[in-house]
Length: 272
Image (tube, rainbow, N blue to C red; front, side, top):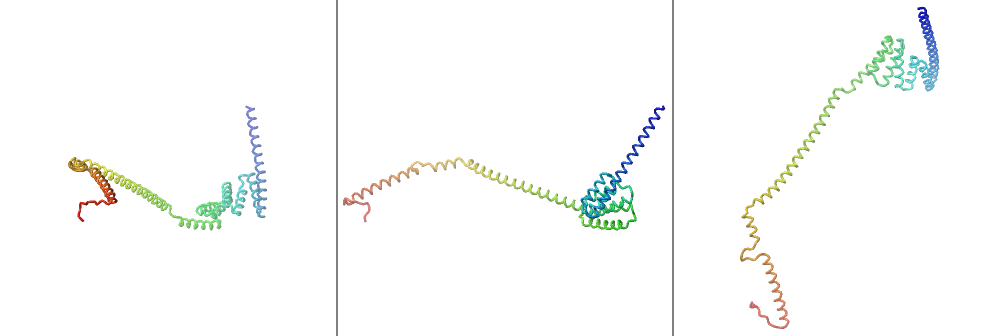
């Protein structure tokens, strides 16, 4: 029992010593951080932004929860026109701040940055947070009024969201109707083309069928017209006969010419 009591006392003593050492290191880090912030402020006063930014960053690395470091670095970014980084640092300062006065300043600056970015609605909320931590600041109250007016103006200028949705829906329906109409027109054209093709085919089949359905007697009559009747000459026979007559006449003419040359009188069938 005695040994157990001594062990508890030793452990308690060790814990107390460790906490004291941690506090000492924390105070030392805070002191170094404050010195770096002081140097950075001097550099900013001399318009040496790049060097000042390095010192602010060193200060924050020594003490990440430093409100002064992030707040002053945010202000330096704001002066240089880097509103994105300025907003990030001021938000850090507002988060880490434990005193209302520090929170008020951080939120006030956040509102100013948002106004620069034309984010009036968000700026209204930032100024309200600043006034919650210091309701007596007339500058914040004045900025809040400007932010509200700006937010209302933006709301009036912005087209109604429901109207945009309705318009988009109408456009979508119109596109769908146009597509359906095009499809229907194409289907109607295809049907018309198919019908014309079918009519042509039916007409052709009908003509062929007509020829097949002609009376047998009519067909035989046509065939008989082509064949020579008994006692009649066929076209080919007539052609052969004419050619023979022409040849015979040519021979007679040749003979007459020959006799004429000999001086023989030729008797003709007709009287002159």
